[in-house]
Length: 232
Image (cartoon, rainbow, N blue to C red):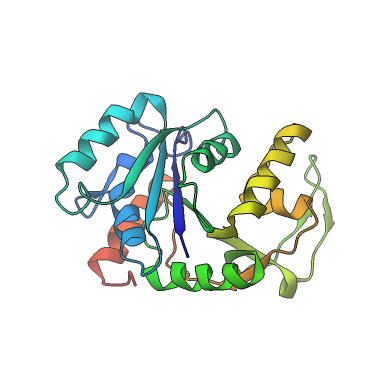
């Protein structure tokens, strides 16, 4: 079974601020994107990684990889991202190996995902077609109108926070993205394009430590997790 991973690291990083994109910020002395690649290459299943980065960061990223003794000889390919996350995912799909059976799509800004969780997702997707990682919500969720009025309170037992990796059989995710492009719709994760096809998507319970670096305080939290040995 041929497994290819797409790591999306082309975002603008508007919420974290600063001149350097979040994928290249150091955590524990190592850039976020390199930590994410470390995790992906530590799996038992991944044979190829496509790293999707912004055009302006291509030279920076290539230099980082060339200088890194752990990663410079690994089977990766760099691809230029698009204007949206969905476009970047499509460009990643265009660059995976032709004989790929299973596709992993993962946020470059989630550097603490465990290799074991990735491998579990691959095994499940091979059987079920599409699986995503998530954790049950712990807070009460409110549906709120633009004017601040609470509209409803969904039952918490059915609500999950969806993370990445999201893992799919290749034919399914390619067809789903092609249909989304024809329909000219934009989505916030890859499971949504599969859901629009009417195909089932299953959730695997993930890890609370699978943090996404989004805000400045996430960098502080990630540093603390490393210092205290809380990273799986």
